[in-house]
Image: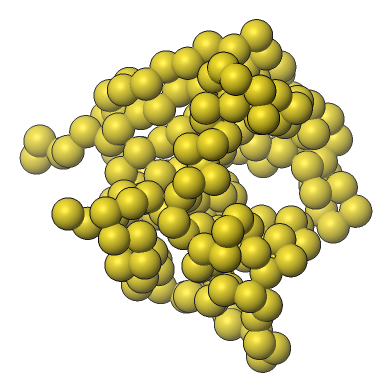
Length: 191
């Protein structure tokens, strides 16, 4: 069995993963940190704790370059020393920290992550990486943490995708007081 690739993103009701004007001085943009209030309960019993534990049990991480840089490179270790594959248009000259590897080809990145996780799961962070992997047909599941707020502006999770439908099957809904955790499996194309 080959590993799964699972996009793991927190989104507002209107589909934003960061507020407007995100950048190095404001990684989540104006109002964007509101999306992560549910993480205050990550160590508690219940849905948010369960979802967080599952995310930390993944065996690799795929990130977009922008997310990687705005997150301060996670100090070279996102969690437990798992391999970190950073999708980028250009590989920087400096040696990356920890278990980080820069990859310019989406299919190669997905193959490396699948090989690294064996029969486990690789988690995807970053709208750009998620979009590239979705366009390439390399996403198996989506974990969306939907927060009841409208940001109105910012960075959208599903911008720039082709106008072709992608079907999903809800396989695991979990409701917490301040977030709805939804896991979807991508249905195989019937074409």
